[in-house]
Structures are given as structure tokens and as C-alpha cells.
Length: 153
Image 1 (cartoon, rainbow, N blue to C red):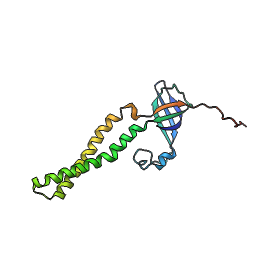
Image 2: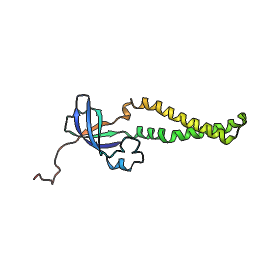
Image 3: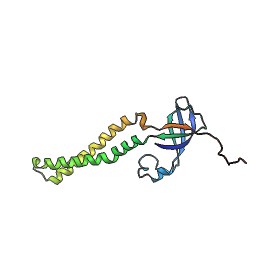
Image 4: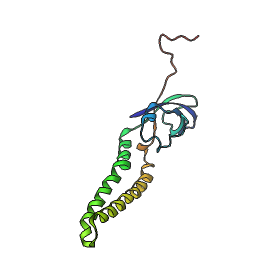
């Protein structure tokens, strides 16, 4: 599970708005330019279900399950390449029946299947965005306790 610390900026009984600062994990990610975090702002606001009855000013930990992220990563990066290869193989096997150059038909079918993969991804995106497992959630409230050994001036 991926976790991030945040502060509740606004809340009601059903939804909480959490302000969080992008961590080093975002900076090292190769996809940071495509997920909406590429701008210079370090702060992000995330909306989550208010399952812990948090209020404005509470320090919280939000989480996101890694299994759905791995599936989305597969869908975005591996699935199009698989369809490209399948299309190229189909094109290569169908080329003799069209009396055309196998390389050209392989390329044509490969690109056709590659484009079709993005259509499938777009359709799948609308259904995945509605599922709860793909959304961040509240993990816990953080206490405001002062660690032992620290003194307040």
C-alpha cells in the first residue's frame, strides 16, 4: 500500500479534502508527467470518503492499494505492445491471401491493433474510475502527541 501524510482542509460527514505534499516517490516516478503531478506545485488536494470522521485541521494518513496500480500500469504500458505484436503476427499470416508484402501488412495490422488497444483502454478507464479500489482512502488519524525528549519552548 502506498501511503502519504496530509492535513484535512475541509470536511463534511461524507467527504474530506486532504492537502498533501508530493513525496520523493513522485519525483522518481517515470510517469509523473502523465498523472497530473508534473506542474511545479508541490501541494495536491485529494478528496476521500470521510470514513474516520475527520475534521478540518486533522493530520491524517491516506492510502492507495498497489494491486490496482499494477493493473493500470500493465494496461497502459504492456497491453498496447501485446496487441501490436498480435496484430503484426495476424498481418504477417494474412499477407499471402491479400497478395501483398508481408512486412507492409504486418505493419498495417500492428498499428491497427495498437490503436484499438487505446480504444479499449479508454473504455476501461471509465469503468475503473468508478471503482472504490482505484481511489485513495483514509488510513488513520495521526495524533498530535509530542515525541518523548522534545520540549516546547
